[in-house]
Structures are given as C-alpha cells and as structure tokens.
Length: 396
Ligand SMILES: Nc1ncnc2c1ncn2[C@@H]1O[C@H](COP(=O)(O)OP(=O)(O)OP(=O)(O)O)[C@@H](O)[C@H]1O
Ligand SMILES: [Mg+2]
Image (tube, rainbow, N blue to C red; front, side, top):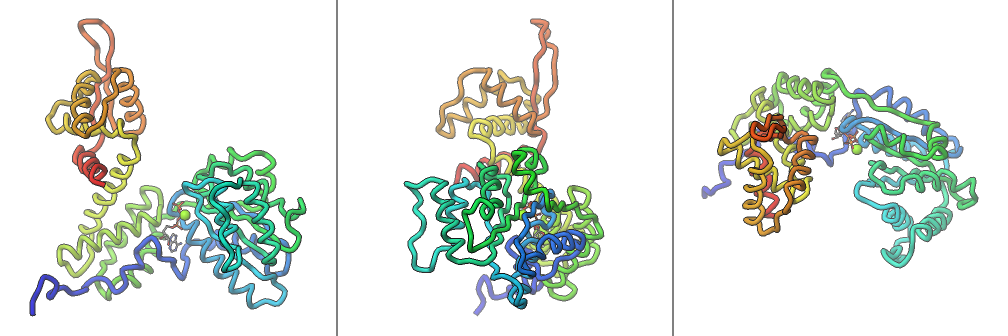
C-alpha cells in the first residue's frame, strides 16, 4: 500500500541525536590544556584529601559544560577503582533562572533518602535549607562535588560561594567534604564577587579559549562520522561550518548547529549529501533563529514598536520620525488588544533602547522649521524576521 510515508528513506543520518544539544560526547577533542588543568585541580579526592574549589570561565559554546561532565564521569569511575579514595558524589546543577533557595533546596532533595518527603517549597528560608543540606551531607558522608553551571545567573551568589567552601572549617559538616565547581560565561562576574569569596575561589581558575577553524573541524568531523551514513557529508561542508563559527566566536555549539541545520536542509531537498550550499542556507536559518529569540526577549511595548517599524519599512516609509512611529504603533498595539503607551517621551525612550541594542539604525536630521535636531529610525535587520517572530509570540 502506498501512503504519504511509504517512499521515505533515511538517507543521510545514521544517528541524528549526535547533533543535538543533549548529546554528551564520549570523547573531548582539542581541549587538552583545559583537561590537564582540570585533572590537576581535581586529583586530591583520589588520594583521600579534601577537594579544592574550581572556577571555570569562557564564552558560550567552548565546551565548559561538556568538559565538566566528562571530567566528573571520569573522576567518579577512577575513584571507584581506588581504595584510598573517599566515596565520591557528583551533583551537577544549572543555576539559570533560579534563586539561591531553589538551588539549595534542589541539592537537599537530591541527597534525601529515597522515600523521605521533599524539602518544602514554602514556609522555610534559605538558612533552613542550608542547615538541612549540611545535615544530609553528613548523613550520606563522603566527598561531594557541587557543580553550579551558569552560576552568574544566580541571584545571591556571594552567599553560596561564601558558605559552601567554608562548611568544614566553620564546623557545619564533620562527616563529609564539599568541593565547589562554578561555571560562568561572563568574565565580569568575577568582579561582582566579594573579596572574601574571591580569595577562596582563586585557587583554581580555568579559562576556556575560543576554538580556531582547525579545532572546530576536528570536532565536527568526529560528530559527522557518528551522525551521518558513510559519504553523506562533504568534507568541504564541514570546513565551511568550522570557518563560519571560527570567524564569529569560535563557538562549537554554533558549528554543530550549522551542521545539523545544513543536514536538515539537504534532507528536505531530498539531496543525499550535505554540501556547501546547505551550510550556506543553514547560516541564514541559524542567524534568523537567533534574531527571532532576541525579539522575543524584548518587553511587549518594545516588540510593538519593532513590529511598527517593520511594517513601515515594508511600506517604504522609513527612516521614520518618532511622531510617525507613535501614530502607527498605537494602531498595532490596539490591534493586538493592548493599551498603547501615551507619551511621545516613552516611545522615544524605547526607540533609543532599541537603537542601543542594535535593532535600529538612527540618523540625525535638521528640523528645518524649528531649527532643532531630531532623530529618524529604521530597522537594522530584515523586517520579515520581526513580523514572523511577532506572529509566533502572539500565537503561543
Ligand atoms: N572539545 C569538544 N569536543 C566535542 N564536543 C564539544 C567540544 N566542545 C564543545 N563541544 C560541544 O559543543 C556544544 C557546546 O559546548 P558546551 O555546552 O560544553 O559549551 P559551554 O562552554 O558550556 O557553553 P555555555 O557557556 O553557552 O553554556 C555541546 O554540544 C558540546 O557537546
Ligand atoms: Mg554550558
């Protein structure tokens, strides 16, 4: 019987999951120096000594999370082999969007015995959560590495980084030991730490540098070998994805995204091989995706203003002055069922923010009649991206 699916064949992928964000590489390539520093900083636990604290810095997509998971798995396996080593427990947490209370509570819950009831969400405070954490650590015993990924997103990081490294010396725990690992892609984060905290964390700082095109090619080739059926991915397509990402920020996530999206484009075209022009299209698509997310991150009114300018742009009515933008904005806002902001000043403030964020171009004009100066605005990106993003936001 033939149906809509009967002629479908999996011609490109042998394992598509290898190109997704959740995939943990078995092997880490091109990070020998970072791994060596990490190895040195982590070794104490294998000899039964107290663990050290470690901070990892580096921009997005440089392998901080992947290398950490790899090192933690390897350390745990090695500790199990060695008699001298203390019992080792690893807790990896992502701090993005969480408060200190939520993070400490999550740690407590991961330590509680299987049938114990969870630490309450409400009613108790952060210091109660810390107390319970210390109690549970001592109950379990052994050495615990607490990994705080994206730690710069945490609200009260100074308290966390002050408390935990001193838990033993302050007598909060006596039957267990903790090592703190913090991961951040924000270099200025370090300056926001109190000096007392900086002192304890300075002992081990590992910084991750951007990948160059050769290194990205090595990483991509390895992924491609696992992800694609033989011969389904051109070497030059890999070189192209690597070159694009190296030129941008040396970000391995971006390089892998280009390869995945490029393969999808090839698949959709029913081509049997991923080639340069598929990566070229992927570049467009990935860029659009990124821009669209930035549009979504704006406040409602900033989005209405962006949408307004996108429409004006398509009607060739830009550059436009704030007065004209305001008039059209009122229409757009009302159509979406919201109340428009009323003052010209509030619109001008948004325009100036959007200009600073790189969404808008601004030019200064002489205002002939009154002899003053005024600004005119136009979009600095494809208006269709904004209109599509806005439609998606409103339909969610
Ligand atoms: N050296 C490497 N070998 C193999 N895969 C890698 C390597 N470096 C990064 N990757 C892959 O690239 C992607 C991004 O890496 P990762 O998530 O570790 O970056 P990150 O430094 O934690 O970035 P962020 O700061 O945005 O969290 C992941 O899919 C990861 O598996
Ligand atoms: Mg990460």
